[in-house]
Amino acid sequence: MSGIQKSFMTALLILATLTATDAARAERIKELASIAGVRSNQLLGYGLVVGLDGSGDQTTQTPFTVQSIVNMLSNLGVALPPGTSLQLKNVAAVMVTASLPPYARSGQQIDVTVSSMGNAKSIRGGTLVMTPLKGADNQVYAIAQGNVVVGGAGAAAAGSSVTVNQLSVGRIAGGATVEREVAMPVGQGEFVYFELNDSDFGTAERMVEAINRAAPGSATATDGRQIKVVAPLSVTERVAFPGRIENLDVTPMQMAAKVIINARTGSVVMNQSVTLDSCAVAHGSLSVTVNTENAVSQPNPLSAGQTVVAGNAKVAVKQEGGALMNVRGGANLSDVVKALNAIGANPQDLISILQAMKSSGALRAELEII
Image (cartoon, rainbow, N blue to C red; front, side):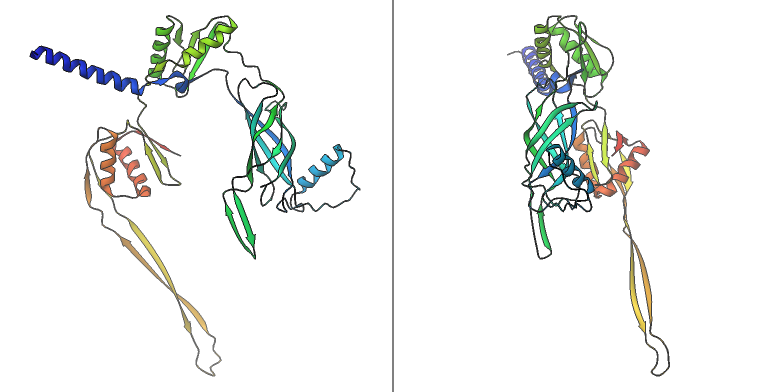
């Protein structure tokens, strides 16, 4: 094999490797975008959980539980004498939440979450009585009822208690039945709109190119998030067409460099676009210790004096040395991680160091504090 042939084969091998790498990073449009108007709707309801083993609400502190029981019994034809004081232990007032999926049909069952809103110790083993679930328009879209499943356990005796997981929140699988449907037409007129999960002009352009390869001249980008696609007018074809579009592969653009900092927990997360210029960092810690020693002064016998307790406070300040350290620049995430680990700072100190690096221009990324 001649030198020219070897060079040609090497170029083909590199091209095949790059193509395979690019294909491995490709994602379906289904993961990158959603169809405008196709969405879930949140439902909310107020109800009662009965059948608890003495772990329900304390009715003296949650009067709304008693009021709900009285109203429910009245609707069932049970009239309580005026002034009756109910001391209930097996009932808990709860909020019931659910998500109505798109295209849910009447009679379909959906899962619900049941959360105690009073002071019940546990809703484990209880039964949710019929609860209407309403949407934002105050219309009833589903009815919930069933046995509550709580993924926890607890026990108490002689003033000691042990609790595993959360006992005041439970779930009912298929616990609500859809009573009202929400109309969701796929697109308006001749267009179907795809909306990117994260706004990005480059990814939007690549998505337009992928759609136009499958259906030439059908897609245009209105902005960095929305793609307008010409769809068939036939109802049957209009449903099948987005299904084909959603399964097209698109390689998204590399996201902007970003560092996410959680100041409450000390967590630091950075994406693969983060780079670091060479810089020098001096890291040291300062600790202040305050100790108080109480001294008792006793008077002499028969002196009619009083015993005095005096506090002696000792304050000590200790500062550990922080030599100036050279931090090498990193062109990829692995190099950045190695450089930051070489500083030897804990996560809380690393937050301050990253902020200082950003201010000095050494950290090439956007800082977002949550």
